[in-house]
Image (tube, rainbow, N blue to C red; front, side, top):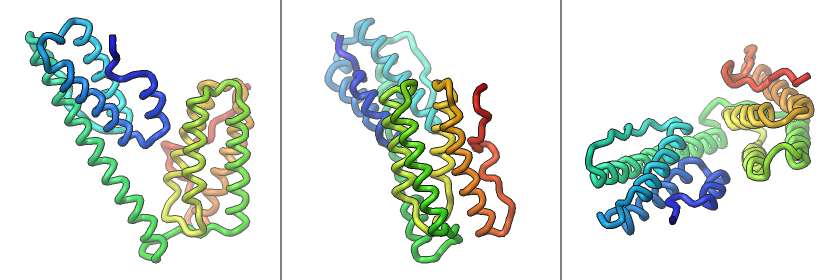
Amino acid sequence: MEKIIPDSLINEILEINPYIALQKLCEEFLEFYKNTLSDSKNQTVELFNEAIGAYSFIYSFAIKWHLQPKIFTSSHVRSNNLAQLKDLVFEISGLAEKKYAELSLAEASEKYDAMFGNVYSYKISEKDLKRIQTLVNELRDEINNSDEIKDEHKNRLRKRLEKFQSELYKDMANFDIFWGVAIEISGHVGQVCENVKPFFDKINTLVNIVTNIMNLTSGQVLLGPPTTNPMIESKK
């Protein structure tokens, strides 16, 4: 039986922006509905179950990335259920596009506001910049050399580090990208790796450098986002 969301697509979406990924998933579902499920002859139990599974995956992915889609409410008519699934997936696609547009605009505005001095920005010294780059490279090496992290997760974590490095310059409006990267790596490594000390030592050193930059620039004692601080004790 043909799958609405093939495994190859699932592997692909792990490597791209989650809101673009959601739209790709929704496109697959809507195309399958148009070509197959809209015909009553194809509304078999097997394909209905496949549609339910695909929708559940899309719904869970949307919840994971903080969207709030409507909840499916079943009826006693299968064709109505399938039509409702189609409508809900279409709505999720719209929510994902809206969120992607909002974040893209905010990211671009933040970048150019910092460039033109329109907003408060953190100053990164040449010494700190070089040290951060070195630690990020060492952290990438730890990820590459790990036998416990699966290849697909290695690729995602590497891309996240590259994203941080590509946006690392001497004046930054905030360190949101860094906190997100640090938390994601800490969380995944803490789950799958037995020896987490090499990872956490480097992450904690980065946290200390970033926090110190924030403190020196603002003149206040800052500890970073209290709910996202990645400093975790190493496993014994």
